[in-house]
Amino acid sequence: MNELQGKVALVTGGGRGIGRAIALTLAQTGCHVAVLARTQGEIELVATEIQATGQRSFAISSDLSDGKAIAHAFAAITKELGPIAILVNNAGVVEPIGSIQAVDPDVWAQAIDINLIAAFRWMRACLPMMLERGWGRIVNISTGAATGTGMENSGAYSTSKAGLEMLTRNSAAELQGTGVNVNAVRPGAVDTAIQVHIRGLPIEQAGQQIHDRFKGFYEQGTLLEPSQPARLVVNLLRGESTGEIVNIYDQRGQELLK
Image (cartoon, rainbow, N blue to C red; front, side):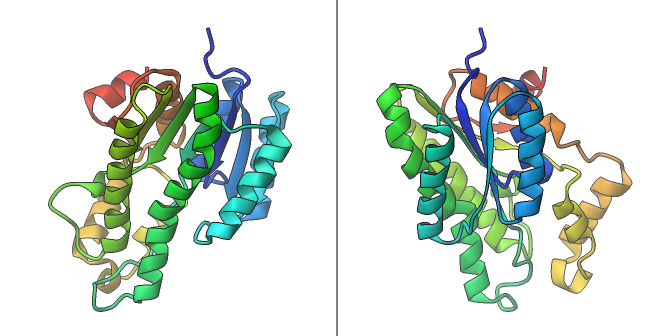
């Protein structure tokens, strides 16, 4: 039995990298997929690929730092495809990268808006339809940087993702027994445009720790392909677990890759 067949899914940040791979994998699983990101041209290409699988798709550009824009996008998606049953909060920004004293506070706050508050807004928008039907799946894409001893110059990104993981756990507890499951995934070091961007930053901006870490992923050939975390996410969506923070490198993550 394919539990996801015919369901409507929304993938934010779906124009490239992990988000694109998740959107395409969901379509191959039988979902109709809304693809949302900032760059209209990219998401239109993904929507065309989805439609080639025989599933319906809808591409919509939106500013995730703007609550009104999110509300508008939600209305447009549900009008085009119907009630959203699957939500993947994948969109995120890594900037600003720099020390507390060097970064612009407004840019720092915008990262929190996009990486954390937008996920909350999407969950809040989608939940009534999920609860009404007694079934829903939410996966928030996090990072290994959300925990641990900390990393210099990446405060906005890691702080927002730590908050996203607690939002995941709290929401799962709140929704226990409703049929709506909420989990998060740490997708690992993946070969995406973000990796390229960070490797290209000056050491004085990124800091030695980040520079060495991301350069090491590339030089050692340990970067994952986007299709790998995408497969993990879709397998997680098929299941009944809730409140999990799944790391792709851990035993649970490896089980979901099979």
